[in-house]
Image 1 (cartoon, rainbow, N blue to C red):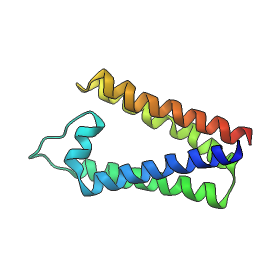
Image 2: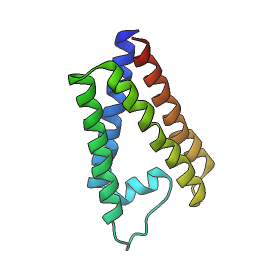
Image 3: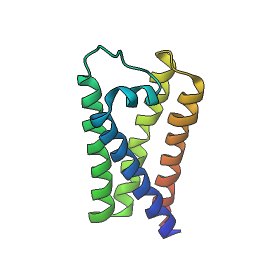
Length: 122
């Protein structure tokens, strides 16, 4: 179970890092994939902020996993699960589809919580 717990946590951290990098490199397609499209002629500053924030969160998770402990990463993931839950509500409140809100964001929150539980168990 230890290998599974660490692998899932590392994959989630890398996924968040990837999402952040994608928002920095391709902000408009990333916003559309998020579930709430940005205006093509609009200011992408907030998308850049999201990219920096996500990349930072991914790196922080990897650092906790590598240099602190599984328990620290578990607490981190427990708190970070609020992000995809908030994303679920954001997509629903701003015209996104239920499929994206629940199929991507809510499902991500569930996986993050499972990962936290696995890390607490090791």
